[in-house]
Amino acid sequence: MPVVHVCTVVPISLTVGANRIDPAVAIPHPLGNPQLSKDEEFALRLRIVNKALEALTTDITEQTVF
Amino acid sequence: MGKIRVVHYLNQFFGQIGGEEKADIAPFVKEGPVGPGTALSQQLDENMEIVGTVICGDTYFNENIETATEQVISLISSFKPDFLIAGPAFNAGRYGMACGAVCAAVQERLKIPAITGMYEENPGADMFKKSVYIVKTGNSAAQMRKALPAIARLANRLAKGEELKSPAEEGYLARGIRKNVFHEQRGSARAVDMLIKKLKGEPFTTEYPMPVFDRVTPRPAIKDLKKAKIALVTSGGIVPKGNPDRIESSSASKFGRYDISGINDLDENTFETAHGGYDPVYANADADRVLPVDALRYLEKQGVIGKLHDIYYATVGNGTSVANAKKYAHAIGEELRQENIDGIILTST
Image (cartoon, rainbow over the protein chains, first blue to last red):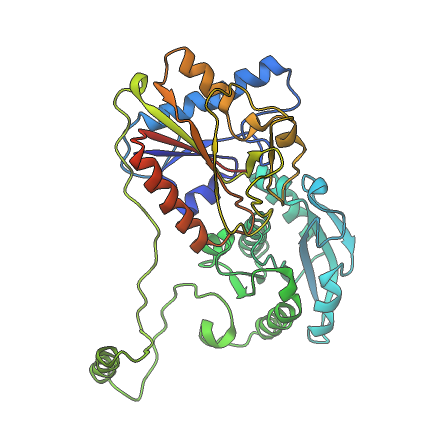
């Protein structure tokens, strides 16, 4: 089964060998942004999760940052 | 001849600015040595002087790698340095990345020697050991007293322009550079000696270590997302309020599995983070910011995914050894395979 790594510091993810990488917002809140309104923040999170799903449904042959 | 001007790079913690709450501080300078720099300066040769310290928050550096590197380089160069020492970073991942990146950039741009120190499992070590001398240290700041003399020793030798011996003799991480030397015994004899030792089960040292690349072949993509069962796993320490399994805030000795069936939204009354090393305020206020249960429930209702798996898995990534992380990954992977999960979203802080 495929795994997607949602994380902020992409170089670390590449170093440790994740194959599917979905860049996130910030270290203490990878899938959120407390500066935004609740609705805007949810929309942001949905975008990141949708990208994660895109990564899981895309065939790859090498490490890929989506 | 004047003294050799040394600049020291530190993070917010060792720079004595503060803990995680100051981790997003932009780089700035202090005159002379700070924190571990004071002890370090006593171990450096008399003609070497720490003229200034550049301090930068670990989060700030890692979230703005390019700009932060530019800013740090410009602050370092303002001291007109002859030498740079960064850290040591021990096993702190973000600090290690920053120390490595700063040393590499200083060598390349300012054309002066730069060294740092870290634990060999630090991700910064893997990333920069080929281009930077990284003195091998223990995995926590408790090892500071051992680390500083080792760093100072290498700095003194490099500053004098002395030729370095092998990584094992000098105490730095192997950079993967091969050097031709004359050996009193020819290769075939050494190879046979090694083989005999191996057959007897005795220890021997290879002359050509194989690189350890922890890589796996990418798995095939999910074919039909609408029917897919998706599982959530996190190293961000999201646990039910009260941390029932008492997962440690650093160097976690375990992972937890938690039921989220029927839960549509994580909130401050029900979930929190057990993770040390990053500011927990945002995750504690709304754990969906680390473990996106609300978004996946929404997509489940919309029929975009088949199902969000009832159980999610969590551990704390902070300072957790690679060996343990691998062990947890195998255990979690095996459980998820038995549940016929089609895809995993792994989130990290």
